[in-house]
Image (tube, rainbow, N blue to C red; front, side, top):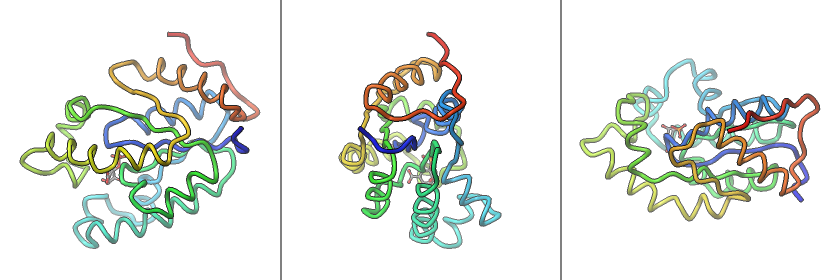
Length: 186
Ligand code: S3P
């Protein structure tokens, strides 16, 4: 039994964390928060600009602060950035404060979803598919370590995924918020 209604989504870039988190928050009567959105709104500049000025390390420090803060809130669905699991303190903060859901998706599918995106600095390389394969190899075990629930995101619609996820959350005993609307059938 997970002693909180908080839900934290982890997974690689393009796995659908933000989309799923928004829908799930609505269905379960919880607030939607997104660590990348929070960082951008606090800094007033885009993620590529933060990477450019402060490097990845500077971004990771900001990310750790924001994750620590957002994960201490109550009744939230938090979409994290794909690299959130890299720092042990982030993994510990997420694990202790809510149900962690790993949205697992294969690199080729992630590549198809992200190939036109200019807002993800780590994918601005000559071979973004290779980069996603490397990130998958480097991070999969960390996502698994953090996760209470693993959801294969594949090619299903967001509504179907949310419905499946809600079943898993209910089975795991994760509490709902007060004003929830039933999830859409698929
Ligand atoms: C990153 C993922 C991004 C963002 C940043 C770094 C990563 O978030 O935090 O570009 O290291 O995987 P999304 O997973 O929401 O794209």
